[in-house]
Image (cartoon, rainbow, N blue to C red; front, side, top):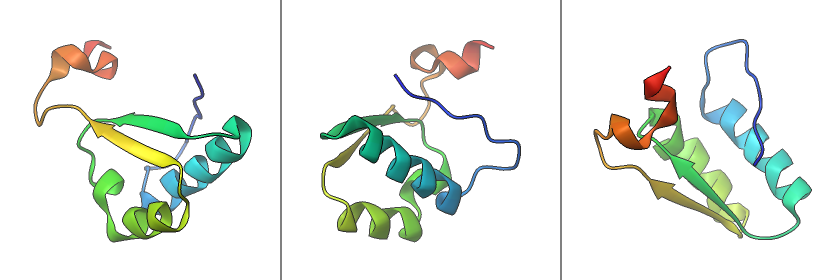
Length: 73
């Protein structure tokens, strides 16, 4: 499991920087489990993922707080 602390509002560019670092560290296919934040589905993110094979997204249901640990904080 990998994480990163971001002290500013998350956006597609920052998320893609994280994905780049994550994919280099992993050295193999990665699966990212996502809630439905906009930056996961942004054009910038989609373009990045199209250029970087080996990154796959799995999304939570549209509203499923019981599946997202962040919602319990």
